[in-house]
Length: 322
Image (cartoon, rainbow, N blue to C red; front, side, top):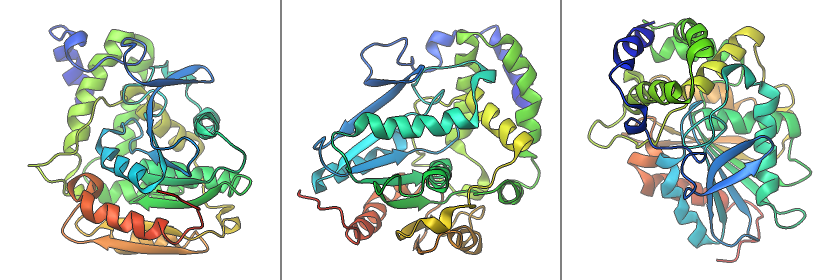
C-alpha cells in the first residue's frame, strides 16, 4: 500500500511521457517482433542459423538491459536472442486481467519458433532470477521440446513451486509480505490504469526494482540498468501464483540434459542450500558460485559470469562454428 500512497501523491504532478522510455507501440524505431496478440521489444545477434541462446530476464516485469553482456556469445558462434517479456521492459502493455499462466508460457514457445530458421535448431536457455524460473516452467511442460532444448543456465531462481516461493519471499525480506503489497494494488491498477497511468506505475516500480532488496546485495556503485519495469504484469503474475499455486517440478525428471546453476555468494535470499534444493529437481544439475557478488552477477561480474557460461556451453553438443 505504500506504493499506492506514493502513486496518489505523485500522479498529479508527473508527466508520464517524461518518466519512462516509450514502448515498441510508441516508438517504431525500437527493434521488435510480433507474436500472437502482442508486440515484444527484441533483438538478436549472430548467425541466424546458429544454435540459439535464448536470454530470459528477471522480474516478473523486468527487462533484458542488464543481460546485454551476454551478447558477447554471438562472437562464439551462437545466435543470441534478447527479448522483453509480455508487458515488461519496452514491450507492449496489456490490461491486468488479460494475463494468464497459459498465455505467458505460450509466449516463450512462440519466441523460440519465431527465431527458428531450420528444423532441429538447438536452443539453450540462459535465465536470470524469474527468467530461470520461466525456463524451468517451459522444460517442465515441454521437456526438451522435441530434442531442441539442449541445455539451461539458471542464475538464482527464486522458486519452482508455490511453497518454495513463500519461503523465498520470507528470506528476501522478513518484514514485507510480498503478496500483500501486490494484491493490495490490484484493484486500483485494474480499475484506473490507462496507458499513461501504467507509465507512472512503471516508473515507481522501476525505482524499487533497480535498488532491489537488501538480501540481494547489489553493488550501489554499479546498479544493474533497467529500461522500464512492468508493474501491472508483475502484480498479475504474483496474484495468479498466489491464487492458483504452481509446481514446475512435476516432469523435470524427463529432462536428462545437464543444467548449471550460477549463484553469487552474497545473496542471502538464494543461499547455497536453497539453490541445492532447486537443483535437486533436475536429474543432472551442477552449481557454480561466483565469490563476492550478489544477485546481479551477470552485470557486476560479467567476465566471471561469461567464463562460467562458456565452460558449460562447451560441454554441450551444439556443433558451434565461430
